[in-house]
Image 1 (cartoon, rainbow, N blue to C red):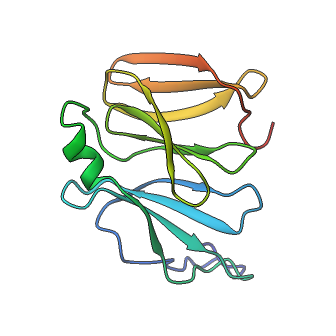
Image 2: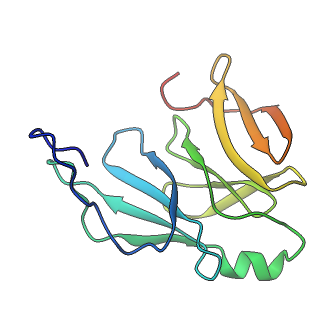
Length: 146
């Protein structure tokens, strides 16, 4: 966090390889992907008024998901939030979609190691980068901010 005095404050040190990051629509919850192979998790942090994070909680642990789907390559990486607060997170096999409570709602299978995603056009198109590809799909929701 960048403080008003210009100094940077450490939000947390409980992740080995923090990577993707996004905020809930109301900006009260911070989501962070941990790309560390042995501990592939997504964390959620409730934010205090001053922007500092309270103790983080494991939002979704993809260890079992990886065991169930060993053919789905890729690690936890970039993510975005839609207007309903669902998290669209790149991970094994494509983009995993989670409810704000951390329930896995489904996966956009790309067949590639998917690195990042962004909502564009009118907000209902999801763009995804994967290896040497740029892909897009139309969704039934809109990205937060549209």
